[in-house]
Image (cartoon, rainbow, N blue to C red; front, side, top):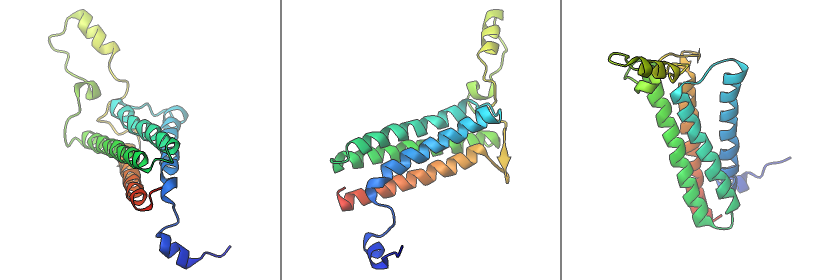
Length: 176
């Protein structure tokens, strides 16, 4: 199959702007599947911040699917892609925060790293122990080449946010 270089130059890319919501939804689902594989396949229990990072992908999936459903309404589709961009940026920010907690650059929330037990009654102490997270946010469960899963997740969420933003801009020019 021959590629018409002039047609590619005129369009500006191989990816049509209308395909961006489909790709964002699919890639967000892939990110969730990788998280579930790490959790259920390799026994890496998620901490509180890991679970918050997954929320951004769920939001991106929902917003992208709605953008797919309103394909005939470019203004709505652009608005939904803007929301998808913001959701993914929030996920990337959460991942960056998580990396900071893992590296002890700053302290995580009490629910994330465990709070102190001084001054608690017996019943309050028991409730705190039973409701404590299984995995601490300030401990790296797995790293590859010195980068934790939160670090890779932040880079991926940022890349998806930039892609969604690119699609938002392309939809504005192509009206489709």
